[in-house]
Image 1: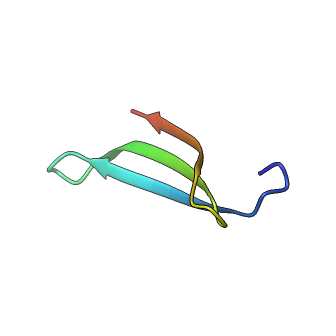
Image 2 (image 1 turned 180 degrees about the horizontal axis):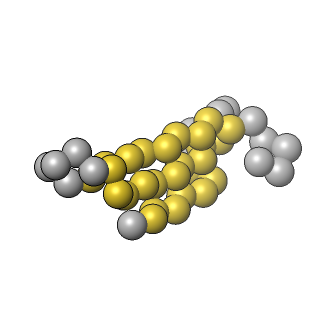
Amino acid sequence: MDGVPVWILLELWGTADGTLDNTRLWVFDREHGDVLYSSTHR
């Protein structure tokens, strides 16, 4: 991301019936662990 090595994590969760209807995207700086970006979608 902008020349910085990153870790990308996609988090999914949902209801008890098993439907995964929520997502969160995280982007972390690999060297320092700082959160560079996060976004939640429902």
